[in-house]
Image 1: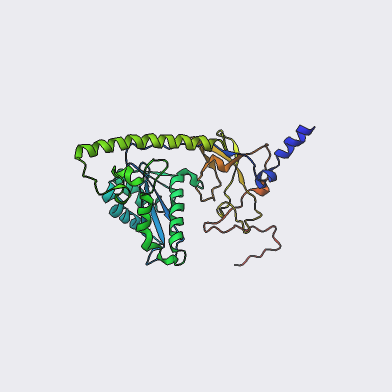
Image 2 (image 1 turned 120 degrees about the vertical axis):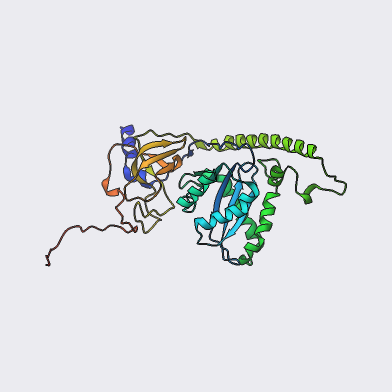
Length: 347
């Protein structure tokens, strides 16, 4: 009797949509393949919401996945894909050449036809992170936090000075010790430490052969350190995670809080709204930890989601009253009358 009651309670659709789950994070940590050389794989992201400094109010962050070397480029919002491409060519391409892979989120700049065609012509493959899952590119997100913290520490009394401090912030980041590298990003990229850290009066200029040998040794050490850092990160991360998989045809609930998705349902008060949308049917598995859902035609979001945003539906019944209402093309709720009180024909 008790097991029957428990099973019946678990199948309550209202409970499945509104109650919080107390469990380890779904899916084990998936490691990204380490590039073979510097500036072969890059990651790009924007830091927005900054106060206007000179004429800038946002930062384009570009980081090399191999050496962890980063560039911080000030920009003015709103910006276009053409403007971002121009800055990219002048500030990144001229220094490091064209990478094989460019990783970014689904910002409209990076998903635009112009940007995709430019990267294609330059021989770069564009990869996008899973929607609503910033952990897909945790390295760049962590770098953004470090940059914001650095600027906040220096100019919290005068926030409008941040653009003038950006070159200093870039040098600070690239010459700081990186635990995953076992050295600074500067040394990982150029093969020697920055001048003010280790050079002394009795230093001498190394020969070309010695310099190349040192560079090769640094690359070997760098790859070993990156592999050890990845193994250590995965070991500790998987302690707090649980493996979860879905099959094509399964019905799942979708968690998009704290995002207000007006294209799924119009929710005026976010505090007491349901924590999950759905249920929706799984129609494909993308990679190891992402799934494609069959969303309503009126939804305007990318249909691929990380497994941590999904929860398997228990039971077979559905509650149609909890289905997301339809919306118009301008994200307004479609209103239908409960009943017609009267009608009149006008010629």
